[in-house]
Length: 489
Image 1: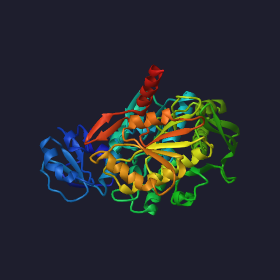
Image 2 (image 1 turned 45 degrees about the vertical axis):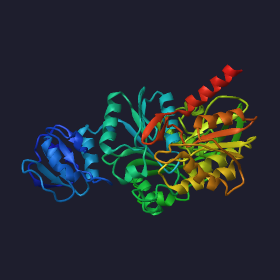
Image 3 (image 1 turned 60 degrees about the vertical axis):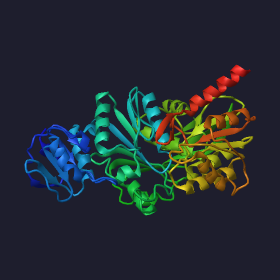
Image 4 (image 1 turned 120 degrees about the vertical axis):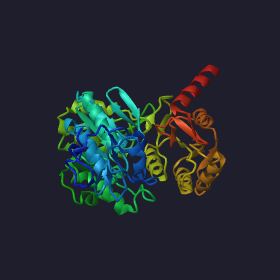
C-alpha cells in the first residue's frame, strides 16, 4: 500500500522523504513495527511514542507520523499532523478499506444504560434476522465469537479491524458503546455513525487523566451527535440541551414526558416467582405494550431506547416484544435462578452512584428484606469505600461487607474503610472477608421475598490479589454453594 493512500483524508505536512513510500503495515505500538511499517506516534499518559522512533526505525519502519519536531534517520519518511490520534483513526479506516461503510453503525453514549441498551438492540435485530455485531464494556461479539473487552471503546486501529472482521463474517450492523474517553481521544473518528443514542448524563469520569469538569464530560458525550446521521435522545434528561449543542444530526426523542416522540406510559412494576420486572405502554411513533424481566425505571428507558432505534429497521412489534422479554446481559441486574421464594442477582454497581440507583429501584418492589453484598477494590480512592458503605447501610436492610479485588492492599483494611461509611447510617451489617462464604451466608439466611444483590463484580470472573488475577466467577460460586447444600440434605 502506498502511504499517500492512507493520508488522503488528512491535513499533513511532509517533513522529509516521500508520500509515495510503499508501506506494509500500520502500527501505533512500537513492538509491532516491522519492515515496511508506518508508525503513528501517540502521546500517552505514561509514555510518548515519539521517543521510540529510533527503535521502530531499527525494526524497519519506513515512515513515521508525528505531531511535534523529531529527529529521524534520513531514509525514513516523516509526516507531521496536528493530532496523531485523529490521524491514526483516519489512517486505520483507510488501511482496512473503510469497513464501517459496509455496516449499519449504531453508537450508544451516556453515563448509565449503555451496556444494557446495546444488548437489547442486538437481541432485537438478531431476532429480526439482521446479523449484528456488538462492541462494549463486557465483550465484542462477532457471530458466535465472544472476545473479552479491555476498553469500553477500543482504540481506533483495533476498532476498524473489528469492523473489517464483522463485515467479513457477514454482519449487516454493529451496535457499540461509545465512551466519553473514546470520543475525546478520537477512537471513533474516521467514519460517520448511521445512528447515535443518548441515554442520560450524571457526573462521572471526572478527575486526573479523565475529564477536568462536568462541562468537559458533557461536551465529550455531545461529540457523537456531530458524527452521526440520526440521533435518538432521552427527552427527559435535564442535560439534553447541552448534549444537543453543536449537533449536526436529525433529532428524535424518547422518554416518559409527553414531549417525547416515542413515549412510555403507565410503567407498572411486577414481582413474580422471584423475578422483578416492569410493564409499560408505548405510544407516539409506535403503539405497543412491553414487558421486560428486569426491574426499575432505568429498564423502561433502556428498552425504550432500543425500541426507538429498532423502529428504523422496520422490526415487527412481536419480534421486539419477544426479544426484550428474553434479553440477557451478563452482570447487569443478572438474575440467578436459585429459588422462587427469593431473588438473587449479580450487578456491576461498583460506585456509590450506581449502587444507590440500583438499591433505590429494588426498594420500589417492597422486598421482604433488601440484602446488599459488596466490597471495594484496593489501590483506588478511599472515598468510594465510605460512600458505598453509607449508601448500602441507608438503603439495604442488611449489608454484607466482603472482599473485591484487594490488589496490593490488605482486605481487612479495605473492609475497615467500608465500615466507616456503613456506620454513618443505621442498617444492619456483617463482615465476611471470603466472598464465597459471604454469598453462602446470604443464601443460607434468605427469607421469602428477600432480594439479594451481589454488587461490584458483575461480568468480572477474577479476584486480583497481589498483582495476580485469580479465577473467580460468582455464578460458579453460587452453583458450588447450591450443590454443597443439596449434598448435605
